[in-house]
Image (tube, one colour):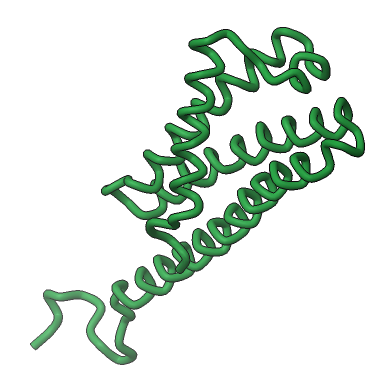
Length: 154
């Protein structure tokens, strides 16, 4: 299982919260975002950073069921990958060749988020299989030739 505190993931999600709060609080957007996205999409993008960051950190720190924690983390990272991917596309489209380095750097965050999503899906499948096996082991199997009616047993 690849669950637990992933330093790169935690740092990225915490940074997303800080960036999202500063974007919303200062009502200021990067020029590439302002030029590439309609106003409503800009706002969704900024709030998406906050929501994905907070949800992801909650999923990582979740003390309850592992499947729930992984599910929350998965949803948050899908959102985080989407908003960072949106930003990378905006940088590529607006900045052109001068923005290749910055765009690739941001795109790497999106790819790493989706890579972690694949790991989480694998973990959820492993967890489901383990639960299924556990359930099969805990269910008593009838013994051949044993009395079926407890009142007829000697």
